[in-house]
Structures are given as C-alpha cells and as structure tokens.
Length: 383
Ligand code: FES
Picture: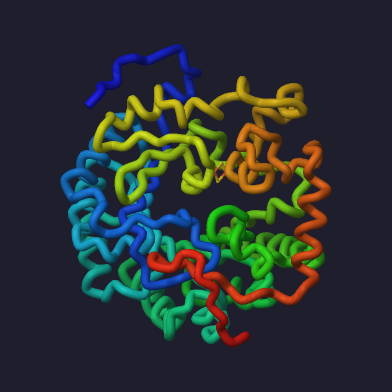
C-alpha cells in the first residue's frame, strides 16, 4: 500500500478531511426502486469488502477526522457483520446512521444494533399509500413492514428520519406523507425530488413531474415547515431540471464527503462511477487519506480551477461549486461542462424543455433496478 504522507498544498478544507463517509456495505437489496442511487453496474456479493477490511476503513476514517458514518447499500442489514461495524464505529466515536429499507431486520436485530451503539435510523418510504408504495419498490407488503419497523425504531428511542424520494408517481401523496411522518414520530422528513443520473436517468420520463406539480410541492412543504416548527424538520430537495441555480452537490466535489463502494472503490459522490473516463482508487490498494488528498478522481473537480466559463467568472462559484458533475456528464457527455441545471448554461433551456415534454406525456413502464438484468424493461400494472 502507498502511504499518505505526500501532502500537497491543498486548501485547508480538504486538508481537514471529510466530515462524512457513506459506507455502501453491499449492493444487495430486496427492493428494486427505479430511482436507486446505486450504479447501473452493481457489485455482486463475492467482491464485497470483508469485515476486517470494513473495520480498517472505519479506523482510517476516524483517524482522518470523519465525524459521521452512514451505513448504506443496497440494504446494509443483509450484512451479518453490521453489528461489528456499528460497535467499532461507536468505539471510535463516530456517529452512525443506518440508511435502510426497513423490510428485513427483526425487532430483535434492531434492538441488538441499538445496543451496539447505533445512533440514528434513516428509513426510505416510497409513498403513504401502501399499494403504490409496493408497486414503486416492486416488493409486496414492503410498506407494511416499513411501518412496523419505524414503530420499533421509536420504541427503542432511536431518532428517526423518513426519506421520501419525490416524483410524478407519488407527488400527489405529499400531504399524506407529511402526516405519516408525524404519525410515526419522525424527527425529520426528507422530501427529496429525484436527481437524474444512474437508474433515475434511465427512468427519467417515468419519474419527471410537471413544473406545476413541483411548485405545488414546494408550497406544501413551505407551509408544513412553518406549521410544524419544533415538531418535525422537513428538508426539501428541489428537482434540478426546474431550478434556476444548481445545487452545491455533495457540498462541492471532494470537499466534505467520500463514498466507499461495496468492493472498496472510493468515490467523491455516490454516482461518480457514471462519469466515463474517471478511475477510482480502492481501499484494498491505497490508504483512505492518500486517496482523499492525492487521487486523480478527487482532485479532478475539486475547488474552482477546473471550471469553464461561465462558471469561472461566476459570483456563485464558491457557493454551488459548479453544481453536479454527474448531471453535467449525463446530459452533455462532458463532466467538466457547466451543470445544465444552471440558467447560465447554454444547455439549460434544452434541459427544461426536455423535462416539460417528458412530464406532459404518459409515464412509460419502470426499468427496475436489478442485479441480474440491469436494463430489462418491466411492465407493471398502474396504481
Ligand atoms: Fe456526483 Fe452530483 S451526484 S457530483
């Protein structure tokens, strides 16, 4: 292994290390959501990092000053060593968040995870309406299991965040989803409009809401935020395609977060492998700190030197850090281009026109996220 001592004159923020690490323990998952943030080419179980390798990743992360570990997947509870990893995170003083679909773990397992030191649970939901939720996830009685799981989380006094990815096929349930978060005693609800890369890019026409639906959802959230101050925190992620300014994706490339895939590749964001031509280092061959500070992939779009015009002379370049590189690649074929979500991009009008025309047409069938048939079209009955 190469060691980390060749530190260069990177800016103070990068030298301070990342705040959070997303540990994608596995790509195995019983759900098949058509907007899954995993890559189109999924890792199989036989290439996953071992328990010892993940423990070493956690120790290296703590050593770098990482504060939060998000155990994710796929479905992280399929890993039988999750208890060991959570216990080690607790021993190292890392705040642990379990990002789960909530359909596999028993109450006893959840209780055991809490005893190991789990700090927080983030549960994904597909809708407030069970039949539609199960259709979107392609998993029978999944919604019912999630509701039971959410109640266990609160019975065990763990803080609960509900994550509700939002799109044209569940947006009409937004008010019911907010009520559901209250009923389940969640502390936080994330109403996150889908971001279009990877599986969501493949399913874009099936997921894209209209501008009117989007504005309605923003209005509903704003009123709920006001009404529920001190009771429920609601985070709202706007859909890029209807935004005027790009989001500071990941807080800026290589500035605050890193992501370790099931087989150990280290990425600046969960979708970075969708960018063709970028090579990613692996924790099996190189130390995490060295990858963070010195790897080509992390330095490629870090800071502002890489920016083209109009980003380079834009007053917001250190606010949005150029937006999303994965979106720029997905839409323009060049990750170094201005994010087309920005209204200063020459491609912005095209992006908006495409969104509007897809949202106006009938939704095509989902291409479900599957390990074996990643691009197989599946027709399922409408809700
Ligand atoms: Fe990769 Fe935005 S998701 S930079």
